[in-house]
Length: 126
View (cartoon, rainbow, N blue to C red):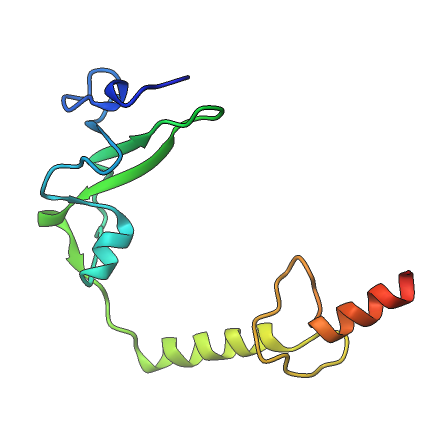
């Protein structure tokens, strides 16, 4: 589906089922999840109210879902138990499964080991 910028303007939702606007042209009163979070809000169970579309030449258009600001709720505060659980999970992702040392950063799942062990492994296979 190849769209032009003009094709992305559907404020009534006739073409796409929900109100649709071109990228960066959303009217006041709507926000993406990231914009809500920056304001200390969350969608709060509401459904997607509208969408933004950004046409691309070779692939499907980029889509961003929009939520109504007046129906958004405040972000729930972090409890001490949640903070402790998050710290424990992050610490577990920093431990290298090969050398069992703290790498000082979160080890990506795609690599599966710290940079030192990965370098040694590459030297061994070469």
